[in-house]
Image (cartoon, rainbow, N blue to C red):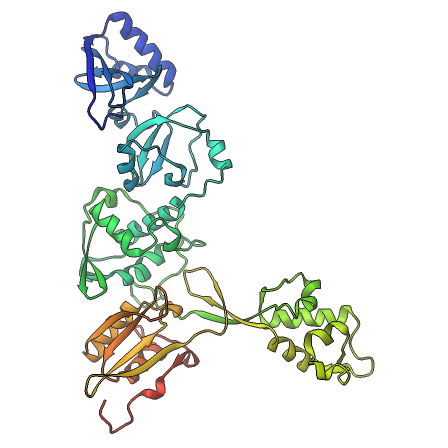
Length: 496
């Protein structure tokens, strides 16, 4: 309201009776204020002015000004404290928390919408519709705006308030936690991807996951840009093409200085004991083959309440089939190694040419026929991230060698992201190991994926990096079956 020009109608010294009335109105509207607080805000003998103004939209407003500072204002017969007053008495009003970028919209006249509200660990403040309330920013108790609640707190919860601020708050907490306790000046410049994986993720509380795509930022780069532009906490630069690094941290920044690690913090992933290292070891993902229920097999899984598309482990499939056979009394009477084929098993597991011929199957063949006819799926569990189930087989890391120009070769590595590996980190490691040019490029036909391209036939070095593991040399332990193209390494005695 006051961000734009307003017109002053009158400016007069308050009368004694009006001063007493103002004090009574303030005491009634804001009961948390003590008698001493009231005396400081509305002193008996000091000059207090009543200023009548018209806001830029024509609203008639009465300001109460003490020592040239507005302390309260009256709008539509409702009394509000100014932000100057709230800075001195920050607990005077219930406060809703939001993010710095939202403040720009508020100063432009926009209302604070529910998706912009950050729900803290203490929950929403309790307000009724029309109650006076304040707005603060994350990590800063000083109010920046004041207004009225359009709906009650109960209505806010009832409306299914699940704004992106929950994830945004977690992102900021892990960011500040990492800067304050893990990052050292000697580590700068620090790859942003390394900062996320080795510093922010370990700061995530147990049972929670950092999912940047579910935040309002969507990408790590946008989040870090906000931390640089709006808070001046860090400085990020692109030191090589497509690879950003944190080059400076302002450890004296008030936001960082005021941050304290939550007392109940318990990390999800811990550093290797005895390693003396401050970073978390890379852990290859756990890849579990799964089998999805198909339309043809749905009758077989109906009793287990498994619908079409439900992914199951092989042991789960085996248990369900075993229970089905026993429940329907299909075990062969004289030979327990065989299962009698009933109409359901016939439709689900036999070919048409077998309908009249096959009357029984061995247990192992029963299970194998079931698994073959199910949809191949897999589950990927990357430490620090929620499990991810995908259809089809796990796509391996692909290493190829391509020709460039007359007799030049390059090694191309694809699908690193599926294994929780950051292409920028792999590229940087390889570049230092083989002392060859290394760049990142968009992977054709793969959305939000990049490939690593390094000069020369470096298949042997790539294989050593991916298959072996050593904390000192930053190597990984990817199972060999998930790395294809190792046969393209140069043969002994031949030039690369």
